[in-house]
Image (cartoon, rainbow, N blue to C red):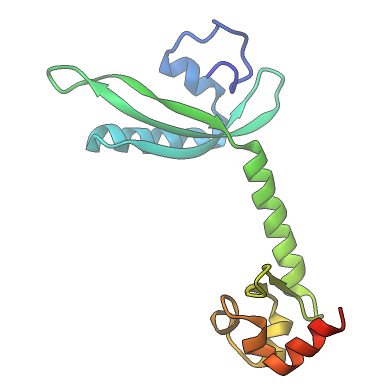
Length: 157
């Protein structure tokens, strides 16, 4: 927790109140509810939330954990892991921004993999071929534009 929470080694006391103080205030209630539900149902919790470092910077983390119970069934501590997911969250935001730009573009835009299978198309592409998204994505380019047109295009590259 220390490295991910931006703390110096051996400074985290392991108490929940200390942990909670680092959780970004708008995320605290939801995280508390997720953890309480996991304790109540004796299941693992898994949640993404933000933390605030002492320098004021905000970071995304993914926490997974489970309560440890005493002989009488009372929770006595939490065990688990926490991972920094800043890069993943940034990639998700970038992808969402890219998808919005592509979706609103009036030009035909399609993303295909190396086997020429559609992975994504925009609305203009759907209108041009008069198909629904699921009728194109997952299918080969040759199936949509016609094998003769596709082979002709490949020869000109």
